[in-house]
Amino acid sequence: MLVLITYDVNTETAVGKTRLRKVAKQCVNYGQRVQNSVFECNMDAAKCRQVKAILEGIIDKDKDSLRFYYLGEHYKNKVEHIGAKPGFDVTEPLIF
Amino acid sequence: MLVLITYDVNTETAVGKTRLRKVAKQCVNYGQRVQNSVFECNMDAAKCRQVKAILEGIIDKDKDSLRFYYLGEHYKNKVEHIGAKPGFDVTEPLIF
Image (cartoon, rainbow over all chains, first blue to last red; front, side):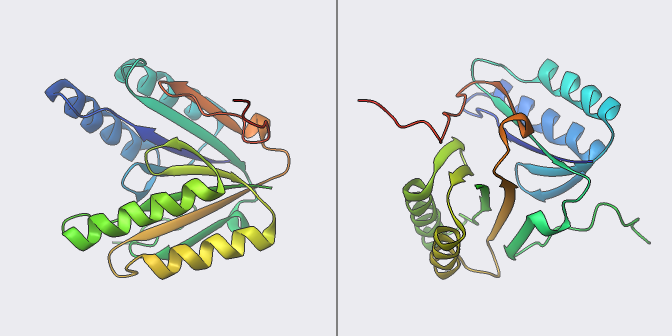
């Protein structure tokens, strides 16, 4: 299923900037960055629980937020992109 | 239907910062800000076309991006929030 992860991390302090880096670094392991704070992750429920637990352990819940949007299996016509940096199809392997 | 609008605006220049302000200002007219660059808009297809056209007119398509996620009518169990600044229920009127 496609899970959209969006986050806001308060970067007013150095520790906030560190949290932001850590959140982004983890998200990269689970999906495709489509915008600065938006990741599309094609994963099953177990992986989703895993990344959720990891991210919850990183953020400061009084200052930062995470949102998860569950787009299901049939998401191709539910997503539209306009402008720079179009997202990659996360179901297609990257060929190098 | 619930439409999620996410955006990345390149703010390296003063005109970029102006674009960002304009995009946010327009989104506020159509929905609820749930994170810094994430809005949830409960609107019909006509309103959606309208805001899309307005935002397309503001952004620089070489530098900025917009993404629209169509979450349909039954979205309550498709969204999960963790941490600060929880979103408001966009279907409930605000009582002052």
